[in-house]
Length: 215
Image 1 (cartoon, helix red, strand yellow):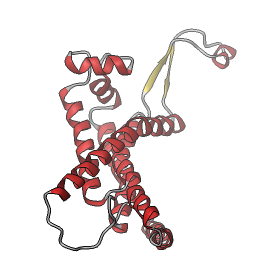
Image 2 (cartoon, rainbow, N blue to C red):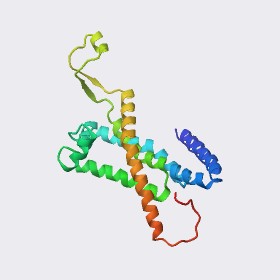
Image 3 (cartoon, helix red, strand yellow):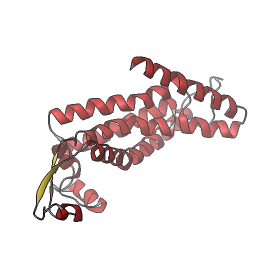
Image 4 (cartoon, rainbow, N blue to C red):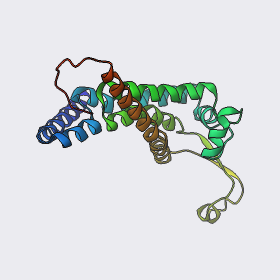
């Protein structure tokens, strides 16, 4: 397992070096490259490769303690749409204070990372890991089915019944949640980090160091 991980890191490093060598010959493309994958190869790789680790840790932690339903209710509350969720921020029907603190922590994490390294892709990957882990904690959860499908009717199951969430559904849900929440949070953190970095340049004297302008 460790050897495979080392080979993966080496392969990603080689791909990064190859593409970096190509784009650095064009200043305009270099800015896009830095804004997409980051200015520092090692930092970007750590952010991307940390996603499966944080997903595993968070998933196991929630699965063995609070459970998926508790976290889901804390984040979503009693809302059923985005407009209700936003309106619920000022009432008791929306996310709890703990859930908002968790979401704010993810935004802050992406912001700090983007301020130091830029890179939209690693910023998104960084926050998708914990969210993916929340989806993984759904594994084995009993789910009530009120409307049996044609397949259930074929086997004589016509009333409400319960099924446990399997591996395929767990991975699909985890990926959906990671994309649904991770992409906007990562983009928001990236935008805030880029803004903070540019504001910082206004108050920092020009030290003559080289870098990617505007990245």
